[in-house]
Image (cartoon, rainbow, N blue to C red):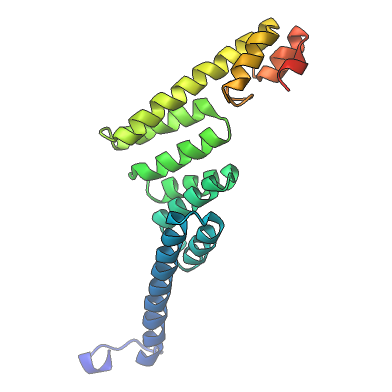
Length: 198
């Protein structure tokens, strides 16, 4: 600053250099952790990938891509609640990026929250209407939602055979919640066949 004829009272120009170097070093370290996390993810080492992405996030907490990547690692580990938290943060940081919505919808799907998953895929498609992968995922989750609704209806009517058949198709037992807030287990209990849903 001094050589350029600029000065800030009480601020030594040497005090600016460490901040610049520190932020540059942090960005470099965050990029290195991101690259290591991506490599671990590709090789199926999801816990290791999550650790690298966590280290990168510690260095660059406002980076939506890092949150999205860690969300994918958590989802691959079956840690859907953690995946959802990161995906929600990615969307909050970058609401015009469809990948964040895709990650959020996938986490909701993993939690068996099919209706919310479908809604989130639709929000993502509003951002990126030509995204074929998200369009297909929306169709898939809509089919699961229909199966979960059929499970709820079978449970509500006490049709234990239909309940069993639907559960065999790997539908989440709480993938549909009735208008009264009843899950299939509650509906089955009301119909006197709660054991069929458990």
